[in-house]
Length: 313
Image (cartoon, rainbow, N blue to C red; front, top):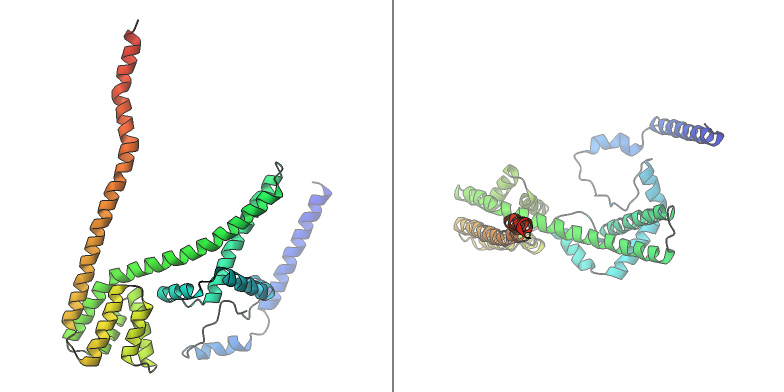
């Protein structure tokens, strides 16, 4: 083994030992005040911490964020000024039910773009070890990769919103029937909502719990229901919230309305399933026409062609 390799191994061993010693010293230090008091404050509401705020920890990621966090936030602000559309992003985050703010989403977009940029740059460096690579096309490709990463994060948010709304639409008939049964049994609308939120789980139930939390904090019921109708992107849920608000304000019958809405959603889901089946039926013809049919024709005509070649003079 050469002297340079021995030196590298000794340096790596010394760095690892120093890191372990420093980590053990930091773990054995006196606990912080927050760590000592927090077990006695578990039942108190906590203010949500922004992802862009530095946390009191010695983890390498937190230390790196404390160093580079302000620069990342400035870059995210520049990305916001270039892309715009903050209202659309805020609307989609509300529909997703995410606690993430617009600034945090822009930081996430920047991270996706930097990951794509770094991956392509590393690939370019590997290529330069074997052959010459023009720097200008590589820089252009890295910039395109950065833009693709940013756009992919935006598309991922849209896909997450669509999947959540599909789950809400699938859960709506069961939630509406449970609510109708509770109201028919003699409970009030709010008591029925609390019972449904207790016995069921899902995306729609999460929104119902948020609605009940707003009501408990002093928001009028009709305003909380109107906020739910505005916040959600599912028309059936918006009609449900509006109908429930009208029923609570005017005292109109609610059981028949809920059963009718559940039946409408089931019928719409059945129609969507039939339409999806029809589209898949057309898509299934692609492998039949371009794969199975040519192979069948070849198997049918190939023996004849061979026979003609054998019998021809």
